[in-house]
Image (cartoon, rainbow, N blue to C red; front, side, top):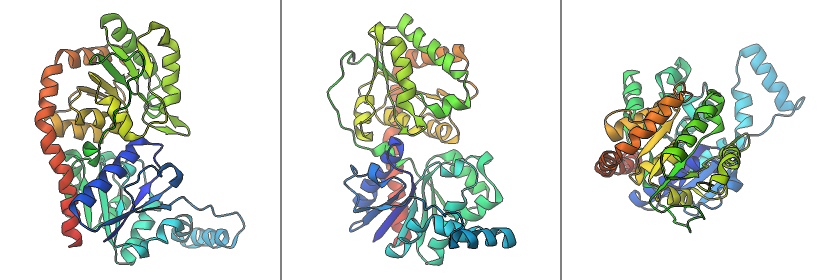
Length: 386
């Protein structure tokens, strides 16, 4: 059985790397003889994922102005309102590989949260035209993200695996019968523990991850994060470990966090983790933290999976759904509009500290069930292809 993962834009986003690593392990453990190939927008960033059987160049092709393809694309759009020819040319690198595999796994967990995705829709159509199995793997989609066009695309899938109950229930309510509930595969990601950096307090370090994506959506949050850091330094004896998790061009956690580090490094209680670690190595550090505060979903999943009390900053349906499945409520998940409220940030942090033992105990109770749900995804895939 040959499987191709697509809708992956490279591992500079360590969450995307975590999905590829953990999904590959899950599937190979459950389905003997499976070979897994990755179509990547930045294949050079994925070379360290050695479990894969091959990495394809899944980057987009440019349609050069005044070329034959450009003229045909222009005419199709102008006279027939049909962009499919152009999309086939742009995504040729992925479409050209469909014939070599049995199953195509669309793995971008939140790709459907960001407006219409005509490129993915076109790839999905080509998969089904070639009579191959099409699976949406570990997705989150909000009610506000849905459209008729998106719903039509989702109907093409042989199997949709929702990674939390909010998405699952919404998709079922939309009339989709191809949906199963699982959990994000990254809950099963292995960890690699490196030497602790200078300034790290064993058993007394809080991780802080913040992202340009979240700051851009609520610029006033920058002041609130400073207020939170000042509160932690003044009212506790914790060390703060600034923890990047995405290092993409124009969306680089490390660059943002470096600004905070420069402001607080002289306190001796603020350190920053390097920007070149892989997903398992970041998880190795997060696993040894006392608390974690994070904007990137997969940084928070790394913490949750190690039963670290965690506070989530400014995210959407996926973070709400994941917290609800873990705690039975949206515990310590602050919406994008809330994270500029310094007092709310500080009171939520204080709540996390005061309820540390209860939170840790609840995560320890939830984690076996969540990890079992991760493996259910591979079971559902196995049922589909058997």
